[in-house]
Length: 491
Image: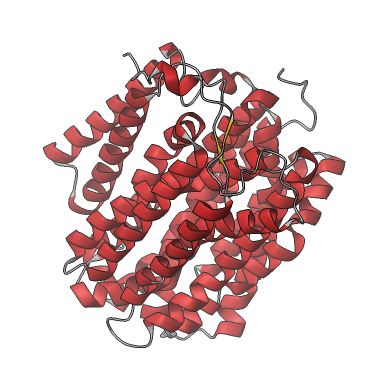
């Protein structure tokens, strides 16, 4: 398949365009006023998507009550967003490189805000699912742009500090999200809608600051066409496979489910063939010639599948079965974020000193122990005895895992492909979560009606957490077998 070609004029545009009012170039200093405003725009933009994701998980029980939605609808409220995000994330980075990173970042921000308004006003679960899919498109447009802007406009000696600030404040957004979502959700049966409306003022600030203070940038050496065919095949393949897994596992594998699943699998196979022949693929298969890169991404797939599946069901269990309020349920996971915020940098330094193999093998095994322990949470459980200890254990496992996992995936790629390697690793993580949310509940016997029946949810929850623990442990074993502490440079 031929990729869509962009006009030659777009390929000869200078690297930095005078889009900012003050004509900033690619040498912005971290501690300068322009640098602070650029960080405000990029941190708020990416933080908006993180807040939304964590808030929605906590609000799912109230959303289900509003629409009388079953488990499948709740799965699709999460997965519709993840599906379009995962399917379009890679090509969105290429759009920014070619047509302007600030332009695509602003487009994604406005798109995300409008879709958020649609979510808040949704009259039915079906409309909400459709709006969540549109939200994912906006998230795919703005997420890669926020970090790409920092890399493009800050002076080389200040980029590490800028990225550190960006990731640190992103961690704060992840911590605040469940608490804020719980507080808003428990105000009333319909106040979950406020969680989506929060995105509108945040997006307005992002647009205002970005238009005034963020310089435009693009890759002057970008050549060739956009990999539209690859993006479409990836999105269609993930959609078909996710739909078939969700429907088939719950309702039985009839002819429609088998046909849709087979079509999804064929689309993903065609995606691999297209990427192998594409002149400018959005996912260069040459990256996977590195054993280190392949092992790191397979570990990512398994660990984030366990994470996504477990934390889709845990807020439901805490509220529907254990009887916690939305605010208490959201706050109960705060120790994980606190541990990540306090110790991730130290874990990264340890991994750099002793090599990534041991932390990447041990971390998922510790996290798996926490997940298996969470399976004991039930109606008579107390937070201090049954929730806090496994949450802390799981958080410690993630601390050991996440920083070396990401660093290993990036360092295994050639320096010139660091951006696409990061995007691939990010996409693999989201795909793992997407598939786990689709298949884990029905495999554990959590049926369509379980969202409204605490007893049915309670019966399946230990099995679901046991499977999540097994998946996470498999990630640790895979890392032990496939990760090397040293690998010759890829180029």
